[in-house]
Length: 500
Image (cartoon, rainbow, N blue to C red; front, side, top):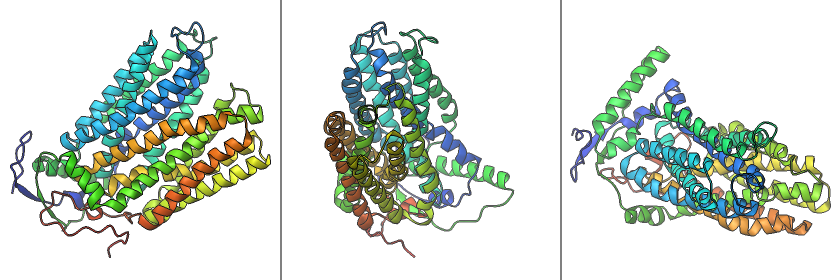
């Protein structure tokens, strides 16, 4: 049965039979996939640049003559909390809209919100203005996570999905490196006046975002979303066009596919159905998602909320030099997903997720032991952190991959939004409350306690993954979780066993 015309709402009970998922999954890697990676993935660099820059310029904004009357504590405390609150709110709000109105519309809207709010932050003249637009900047970034992760997973072939998702999420740390180095230049009063340099760091984020928009407008809507929501003809036309481009690029014909599925088209799904699906139909997967997000959130806060204070308090590092140490740590965070990412598609999800979580936790336990004994200096402590975060970054990125692929198509963006919001709230609210006091106290045992909390939760999450993780490697999204709209769907199982 043909799909309704573009812009129309499918009739109740209307069905189509489609082979679009199978055709997308059998595509070889091509220039079209690189366009998707660049257009959708670069926003994580912006996020890393944003968060790191604000942390590094907090002291300058708090100085007399900066043009803004706020304290450093307000920037790292209230402004950071508002950014986190905005990210959680934006993820949930835009996540629901993404499942209802499509990936492309929303990943353009969320980027526009981010750009506008960042530009307004650069023009701050009063504290209330600065705080308001920090919230709205987070609101846009939170929406990006839901829209972008769902679009990436639905457009990337199944045999590459794991590595691509991990590397893209890990690219946050490229932005963190850039933010650390940018702040050194922007805060140099020999180059820029005190009330101008910090504003230029936000302006640079706007410029980079505008470049991303130019690339992103060529990224298509998800054909998987289209055929479920009454636009089957557009989905077929898009995949036809991509196949022709790939065949011209590769100079060979693509093999035919035989797998098809029948879908009851629908305009949208309410919160009630989404909640019942995630927590009633897939309770073990919900436990897995929560465990992964909360574990990585606390580990990262055990380190990142105190690394500056630890270096200056215990090792005598100048506050002006901590940025260089952070750049080294950020590099380790990016290298982890880059090198380990392919193993998530070959060795498998369950083994790699559980091992990266448990290894990073054990290494942090070891770091806590060496720190308690007084066996570390600033350099060796940074080396230990790099080793921990090499594995932890791959694990944390796999949390986003996991929740984006183990729930049905119709709930994907909302599932990502929910677990992201819970993890972000744990890291951005509970984390600072627990870890900032522990790591700034100047007492060795307090810092050790912070490390032990993060390490324990990370190991616990790894053990949960060892038992509950789904072997999703190289499998179609529709095979991992049957779409709610599929006609006469087979009974789902939460078994982690890959079908023969």
